[in-house]
Length: 323
Image (tube, rainbow, N blue to C red; front, side, top):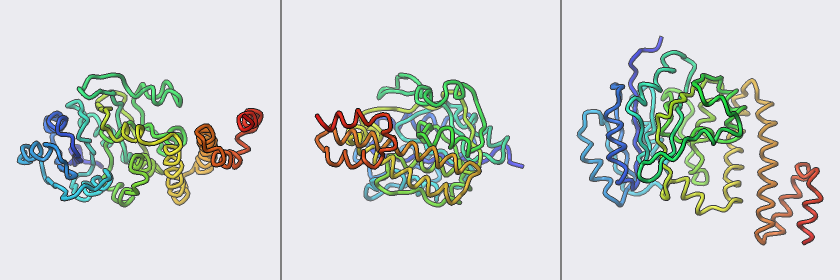
C-alpha cells in the first residue's frame, strides 16, 4: 500500500538561465503539494544564475545546492547527479527555463497513489516563448499518431505505449512535465551520457522506464515548456543538418532496441518490426538529403541499401540520379 504523502525530489539543473530562474523557483516553492525537497544544480553558469540560486538556497525546502567548477557539457550528467542526491520516492526534473502551475505536483502524484505498477506520469504542456506567452500546446506533436487519446487522462501498459508512440518518436514534450519513480530509475542505472545523444537521451530514458511497467498521462496543460533561441532543442536544430539529426535518431534507436531486446516485452516482435520500417524510411530520407546536397555518391550508397523501401519509387530514384 503506497503512503498518501510521499516525498518528491525536485531537481533543478541550471545553466545560464538567470532570466528565467526566479519564475522557475517561485512556482516550485509555492506548490500546493508540500512534501518535497529541492536540489539546486548549477553547471558553471557565466551569467547571474549563481547569485539567484544562492538567494534561494536558504529556503528550508532546499536540501542540496551544488555548483560545478567546470561545465559538464551534458544535462544528463546533472540528471545523474541529482538522482544520486535525491531522497524522495519520486523525482521531478524541473528544467530551469520552464515553469508550471502551482498544482503540478498535486496532480501528477495521484496516479502513483492509485496504481502501484506505474513508473512514470507526465502531463500535457503548453508551448511558451521567451517572455512566457503561451503560443500553443503539444497536441499537434501527437496528432499524426492519435488525434483523440491525448485529450483525456489515461493509464496505459508501458509496452503498448512504446508500440503506439515511443518507438515512433518521443511524445513526451520535456522533462519538466514528468514525474518518475526514483526506485525504478535507480534500478535502470545512470542515464546514458553519450555526448552523441545529449539531445535525445531523455527519449531513451522514457522508453526504459515504460518497458514492462505502466505509464500515466494527465491531459491538463500543467507544464509550460519554454521554446526559445537558446534552448537545447532549438540550438540542435540550428546547428545540425537533417542528415545529422537522422543519424542521432538512428543511433538512439540502436540503444533503445538493444535494451528492449534484453527486457523482452510481450510485444517485442511488433516493436522490432515497426522499428525496422522506421529505420528504412529514415535512411531513405537521409540518402535523399545527401544526394540533393552535393554528396551524390554518399547519398546513392545509402539509397542502395534500402532498395526494398524504394519499391514503387525506383523511377523517381533513377530520374534524380540521371539529372
